[in-house]
Amino acid sequence: MPDDKLILDDVHDHEAAQPDRVYLTGGAGHLDEALRPRLGEAAVRAEATRSLAALLDEVNGQLVDDERLRMLVVAREPWSMENGRLTPTMKIKQARIESGVADRVERWSAQAGPVAWG
Image 1 (cartoon, rainbow, N blue to C red):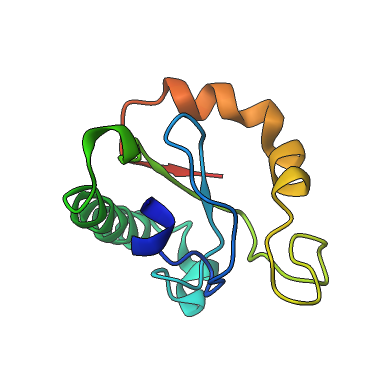
Image 2 (image 1 turned 120 degrees about the vertical axis):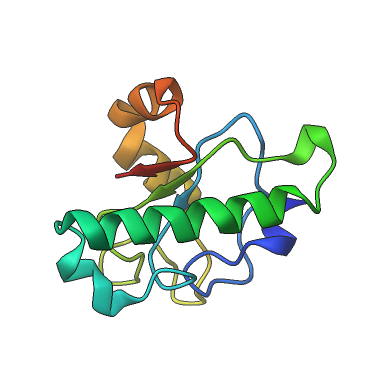
């Protein structure tokens, strides 16, 4: 499964990814948190997008067709216990995350590129 290959926000015990859903990266897995304040800079965002697209290609190359992810979505803020997106045992609160982005999923799904910015 994709979640075995892609560690999101250093959380190892999260719900199994499903290819028909849009998943979010919280930022710490492969996007250095030091870059977050600079993501408004075109060159920084372009390099982060290239890096994440390469990661997606690498992960998808290890998966069978029906497990492959169509895109990565970078969350606006890291997932944490403080913002209610992680439990005290560091498990992802999937329903909370999905309800918080429900109004944007259709737009992300219509996007052509491999990386969307939350």
